[in-house]
Image (tube, rainbow, N blue to C red; front, top):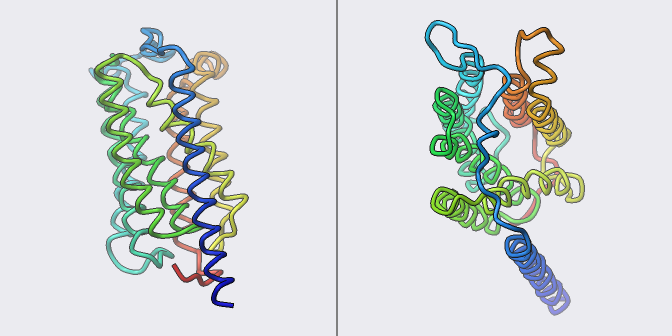
Amino acid sequence: MVFGSHHHQLLLKANRARIWSGAFLLCTFFFFATPKIPHSPKHHLFADMRNFLGVPNTLNVITNFPLLVVGVLGLVLCLHGNYFGISLRGEIWGWVLFYAAIAGAAFGSAYYHLKPDDARVLWDRLPIMIAVNSLFSCLIIERVNERIGVTCLVFLLIFVLVSIAYEGTFNDLRLCMMFYFIPCVTIPVMAFILPPKYTHSTYWFLASGFYLLAKFEALADKKIYSVNHYIISGHSLEHLGLVMVPVMLTIMLWYRNIRIPRDF
C-alpha cells in the first residue's frame, strides 16, 4: 500500500514535469515562430479624446478610478481580519499581490491616458500583467498545490518584469503577449477542469465573462462610441468592464467556504 502511494506520487510529479516542460516548449516555439511585433502608433489613437476641465482624454482617465477603489478595498480585506475565505499563506500572498496590482493599474492606466505613447504604455500594461499572473498562481495554489503555486507566482513575476524590459528595449510585444493572454485562457479552463477546494467557484467564470466583455468593448471602441451618440467610448467602457473582474472575485472570496479539505 505504501509502495502504491509512493508510486502514485512519482507519477503525479512526472506528469507535472511534462506539463510544465510542454508549456515552456510551446511558449518558446511561439516566440521564435512568430515575427517581431512592434508598437503601432494606431494603438494610442482612441475614439474619445475629449478634454474636460483641462484633463486630456478625460473619460479614459477617470474611468480608472473604480479600479483604485476595488483594489484598495480588496487589499485591506486581505490584510486585516478573516473577511475572505482564504486558508493558505500562499493564497494570501497571491491575492494581496492581485489587489495591489489592480490598485496600481488605476494609476498606470490614468498616467498612460494623460499622454498616450510607447513609453507610458508600459505602465499601463505592467500592473494588469501582474494581476493576471497573480490570479493564475492563486488558482494553482487552490486547485493543484500550494508550493507549486507559490513557486509559479515568483517565477511568473520575474518573467513579467523581463518581458516588460524586453518590450521597452527591443520594441517587441511577443513576450508581453504570451504572459498576458496565456493565463487569461488557462484560468477559465483550469477552473472548469480541476476540482474546486472552495464553494462559489462560479464566480471564476463570471469574472472571465466580464473580462471577455471588456476586451470586446475595447475592440469596438469607435463603433460603441458612435452607437451611443458619442457619450462614452468602448475603451472607457472597457475600464468599467475590467473593474467587474475584481468585484466578482471579491464577492467570491467573501462568501466562499472550504469544500474539499486537502493535505498539501
